[in-house]
Image (tube, rainbow, N blue to C red; front, top):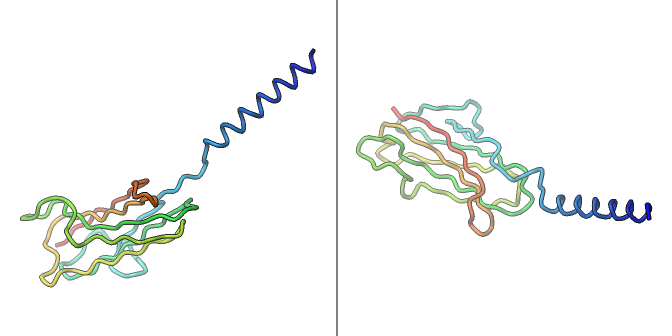
Length: 142
């Protein structure tokens, strides 16, 4: 009788561990870092740009084992004469195989970036287009 109880307790314990293991993922895919700068390699991070500077961004996607998309976009935060929100035409989506580096380049318009406060947002989307993570970096143009 005592042996049957031990076996039952052991079996239930194994079932519990197996059930928890199926639902628990210690490493969730995420954007582990986002850097912006004035050169492609982001040799030095920047938070202030000139009206004619190209804006480069590097986002590190970590712990991703499945295909995903990284969407980078520029956003007016507080730019006089502009409505706050994503800047039309300044959004780029990259298809990634999993954990990878996403590089974004945003060239200034012919008239230059209007002075003010901006954000660069990177969104991580699964294959179904559902947003799974987001990071933003703020910068100014003067």
